Length: 187
Image (tube, rainbow, N blue to C red; front, top):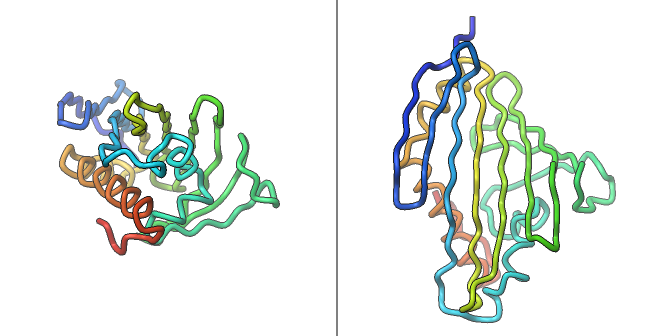
């Protein structure tokens, strides 16, 4: 029988706050908020208009090693709220995704994905341009365990793990912007 985690922990790391929460009787829950700061020298390719599209599911394939998706809806693969697609992670577990918010003018995209029998994840990415023409992406992960397997994953989602993960995004995106190629095995 699935029993939710009961750990409540607040910690700070250099990337932002990492909060594990659990309401009594609720499911295991973790929320991570961080800032991914594009600090490379200012070049045309670092502008907000170039960076934000890389967080869209089709364009993520340009920089994210191993990212493969199967678009279910719409069949045109148009990026829009309500888009549905499937992926397989490095652990080969299937995830079903939907875009719950997409506002190109506000540089905002939000995903919800579910890994059946494990966890539900909400990911929000909000980009903003800086006065030096660099881009800041505010990335928020919110995970809810659906089973012991999900609780086990949440238990491994430490500050160190999350920092390494976000830094790998930063390296992969910078590599793509500089070279136009995927950084092999960034993790």
